[in-house]
Figure 1 (cartoon, each protein chain N blue to C red):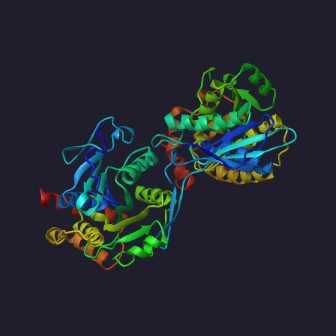
Figure 2 (cartoon, helix red, strand yellow):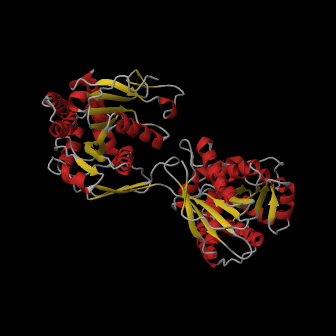
Figure 3 (spheres, rainbow over the protein chains, first blue to last red):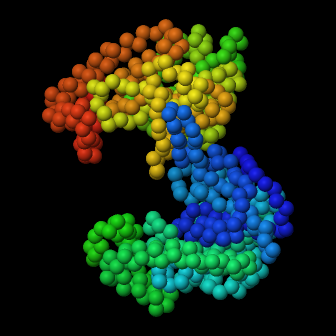
Length: 303
Length: 275
């Protein structure tokens, strides 16, 4: 179990930005967009076979040509303003059938990522994911901020469109971040790094849909851009958002009117969860979203 | 755990490893490895401890019998064959495969690895079984081309599916420069959870020829005959079974619903007849 490094560049206190797939692929879209914009180079990878089952075998004329595993790669870019290390995982390692990382494998992978961060002198680690929220898809997603230190929280809170978990309507100061995005910041704190998790808001009723939510990725990217002082071209992510918005609108139109009315109230102001859609409505949405996505029956919610 | 070297015969030269998994369609892996161990007087050499590789929060029950994961190496010294018969692990796959190959390569001097498997086929049981192969190198393919194996298979894992563990084992053998072959047989879908003696015989024909085994695989002819007769009885009793099988025999497809129904009827009938 280990890391293969293709290059060992000389860094000046780089920041590490890590992402894995998750709800709406919010973090990974933001990080991949930034990685592409700075034209980061591949630097190495974590050997996959101890973490993942292969995803594809290719047999050509009865010869086993390849066995592909999900990748977990490091990239880097040396910039005037800030040296950057990226880590992008194609899948989260799990012990069983769950989608999000947990247990020994996740802990081992998080430690390997931080070993590389430590080796190259990183001081700050960023992860990014989704914040399932009682918001509306036409509202600009906010970015929930969780950090390893109060001082860091104060620093990042100065950026616009950020919000702390404790400031969310209807929530207490307590919460959790599932999967590697959470585990990595926790472990980073334990190992003495500054750690920041930026979570883009996704409406609760879209958290189970099988497509990305790039509007939230844009919000995360805006904060990363400001923090790292890197100018970002948002045209590609905006085009993606436009296309996804059209899909969401078509699904939304098919929602039963009573649910739609309640969700619409969210646009008037960010209402506490319990004053918005009921648990029953939420369950109905979860059960029927696939059907709505496929263009099936819409207005047949039992009263 | 017992000492893996305690029962090893030092005079063995290079050996070949045959790997079978117990969850195969048509019970292929179990049947072939059990047969080889029994007929070649194989003795238990080593057992991999299940703790790291299987969920041990309880046991499963099949046909009123307790099932417990097993991963056992048997040695058949007269033929320099090592048989590894195992339940498919649930996690730590790479570690498991590494352990299997380490024991085979370093303790049993294995140079050739044959992994056997089956896949679900939508064809009828009356059609001949075909042995397909994937190999670690063109040299291995050339070496095995003279056997009755389909050696021009093109295959890519479909999106959303996972490759079988045998292809991982073949890949790992390839990385060690071992001679590796993954051999599999398409089994009619309605025999998935039943023994398919035709596929057992087909696989054993290859091993008999390859290792010049002194075994009489015509032992399987009686089982094949009995199964065919029982399926014919089911055809006579249930017109829809006969209708579905005729469609398959004519290379026509069945609806998903008819597939499920046929599999259920055949399975229930054959199990009732066996009991």
